[in-house]
Amino acid sequence: MIRKAEFKDLINILEIYNQAIEKRFQTAHQKPKSLDEMGIWWKEHNASRWPVFVIELADRVVGYVSLSAYRSGREAFAKTAEVSYYLHADFQNGGLGGDLMQYAIRNAPEFGFKYLIAILLSENTPSIRLLVKYGFKEWGRMPGIAHFENMSCDHLYYGLALKF
Image 1: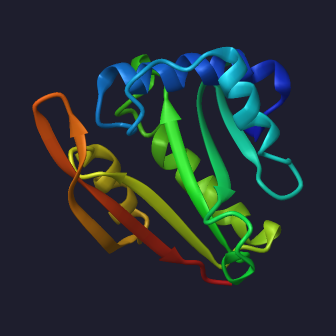
Image 2: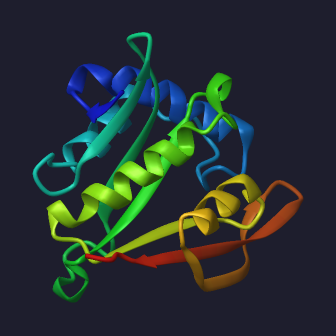
């Protein structure tokens, strides 16, 4: 079941995001986030404009997708949202990421969005495959600017023009 996230889901969202940090290359963050830091993120996601949706299995939140401001405060980008999605480590590669992405694509126009942008790292090949499967194309690449210990990777922008 996919539904709008509630504040009570924040602890599960934090756990899932911190797993992504630990795995590396699923986010550019390298240090685990605190509940206070995620609380700030939560406040930026006004449900009427910048929603967060969770996916539940057996009453357990196992993943989420969010629509966030792209270049916040710049009016020319008001119809564009950054889409981010994360799954609990125990539930990856089972099709739930696709369910979340389909849900985000289908519901984004309700919030006034015409474009979705996914910003990710070149080493995150499962996410790249998922994005391509749902029609996203590479719209930009910044070579070698993300650094992890002794390794660098590209920062990618994938985009999708939504069909109405």
